[in-house]
Length: 325
Length: 181
Image 1 (cartoon, chains in turn red, brown):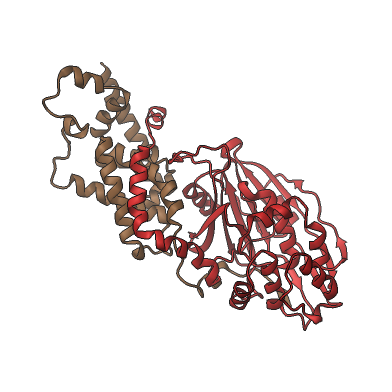
Image 2 (spheres, chains in turn blue, cyan):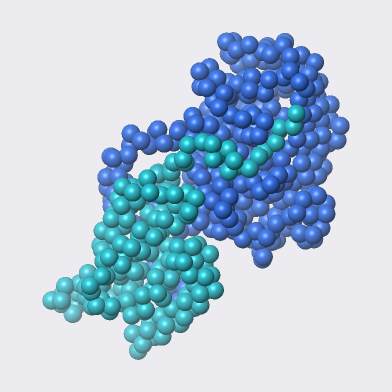
C-alpha cells in the first residue's frame, strides 16, 4: 500500500509550476536578489563552519580546499567567484596561496588518518568530545585526530602574492612579518548513516584554535582574505568591519553552487546550505520528495560544531540533526 | 588570542532577521505541497488551485514567518493544512466521489471507467479515510515527510503519527480490496 501511494505521487504540471512561479516571482523578483545577498552584506551570511564540516556534495572538493585554507587563514564566509574557486580547485593558484601565508610552515603534529571505532563511547574517548549519534542506522564511525602547526608570516611574500592576483590596493600589515600563528586542528568524528544515495554523514568536532601574537589585526587579515576570495575593495572593507573575527568562523559559498538559510536545531540556530543541482541530474521543475540536491546543516552547541549532510531534503536532514543524542 | 567558533545563535542574534531563499523553497516544496493536497482532496485540478493558494499566501505573509518557531516547511504545510480545512469547511465529511475526482455527475459510464485508473482508485479509497488518517498519509506518502517532520507539522507526538499512519494504511488496504472485489 505504501509503495502504491509513493508510486502515485506525481510532479506538478510544468506549465502550472512555471505560471505559479512567475506569478509569485513577479512580486518578489526585485526582492529576490536583495534577499539573497542581504545575508552576506549584513554579515549574517558569513557562514559559520567547523573544521571538516564543509562538504556539500556539489562543492565538496573545492570546499575542502577552502577548508584547509580556512583553518589557517580564517577567511570569512562569502559568496565566492566560482571561477576563482575552480582555479584553486585545480591547484593553479596553490603556490600563490602558500606564498600568501608565508612559507615558514612548521607542522608540529600532522593530522592523523581516520580510525574506525566501534561505538559512540569509543569515539568520545578517542576524540575527547561527547559524541552524539542517531539512535539507529550508523554504518561506519571514524575518528581523525587533529594536528598542530605554526606559520610565520612574511609581509613581502604576502604583498607579492596579492600582486600576482591583481590585488594592489590593499596594505599588507607590517606586524605580520615574523609573527607566529599557532594552529591546532581538532579531532573530528565522522559517522556514516545508511548507505547508497540516501547516505547521510554526521560530522562533529571542537572548533579549531588559532592563536595569533599581539599586534596582528584579525580584521585586517580578514579583509585581505575577502579580497582574495573575489570581493571588491569596498565590499571587503565593509564586511570585514562587520564580523567579530574573534568568534566567527566563516565559510565561502560558491555563488553558483549553493543557497543558504537559517534553520532551528533543537532550539539552536543553525545554517542550512542547499547545493545547486548537479549537471546530469533531473533538471525538471520538480525535485520530487526525494530531491537529489546536496544539503548540509551546521550548528554549534557549546564549543562543538556539528554538520549533517547528504543528498536528501532539508526536512529529513534537520529531523536527523535534531535526533542526535 | 584564541579564535573560536562561538555559538551560531550568538552572532545570528546580532544580525538582521534571516531571509528565505524563495527559489529554493519553491522548487523543494512545490511537489511536496502539491502531492499532499492531491491526497487530501483527491483531485489534481483542485490540488493545483490549493497549491497556488498556499504559495501565494505564504509569500504574502512571509513577514509573519518566524524562524525561531518553526522550519519554513513546517510553516508552509501549516498553511496547506489550513487551506484544506477551509476547502472542506461546510461540506459533508465524505466528499462525493464525483466531486472529489473532478467528475461531473452526468459523465458517461465509459468516461468514468476510463478515469478509474490506479490513481483514481487510490484517491477514491483515500476519500474514505478519516480526516486524521488522510492527513497523516498525505503528509507521509504525498509530501514524503518522515514521522518527526509530520509530528512537528501536526502537533501530534511521533508515536501518534506512527500509529495513525499504520492504522490509515490498514484501513486503506481494506478499502482498496473492497473496491477491487
